[in-house]
Image 1 (cartoon, rainbow, N blue to C red):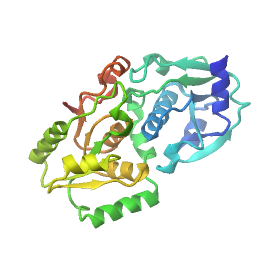
Image 2: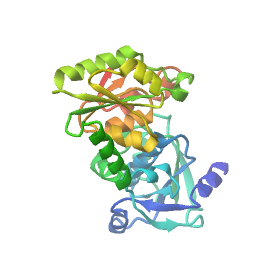
Image 3: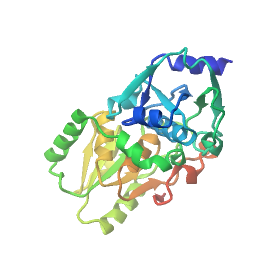
Length: 291
């Protein structure tokens, strides 16, 4: 009962989301809604929440819901339409994932249409939304002011027309957190050398909240260091052509939204988090893992 009450409170300020969500809901005659209990973490986590709810909703013919205060709305051109009251969502059941990054196929199976559904979990697997990948990419379009700032940064650095490799270095809270082994400089050196050999005159655009570490270890003739805030850093990285990523969902999404080569740190996750993330459910098979 407690989970249902929490789920109901979650929807006190919600709306259906999507560039064509009204048409989709009407066309499929959706009358039930799919939401999420809790909303833990920062931007990358929230992107997984939204994308996975979209994918699950598409599979079971439910309309996904999201809070109007969700952080992804600060960054992306996602439309909010048709607010929903708590009264509408009182008839609700809670479904749970197996673990953080383990694809739970049962969530994609048809369900009894007599109730709304709230999913409990992190939903960190691309398999939830792989069938609607093109729609997800259309949702995660940068807001005009952020895009303008990124264009200004690229112009100032004189790299607008260069082949750009986004390099994300996650440190901060991961330095002391269990299950989040951090890559050493050698990982980045190996990844950068691979792309130097396969790309024509690339420039490595390094973003990190630990700017000193990035400057000390990744300052080269063919690299630039950029760090402003979460939204701009994310936009810079996703606007690059290729990706080198370390750990965490922020990194993951910057790689997913670029269409080139993605190289990831294979040491993440590590125990005890490893038991909750299946690498084949978390990393697309065409990404390249290095340690």
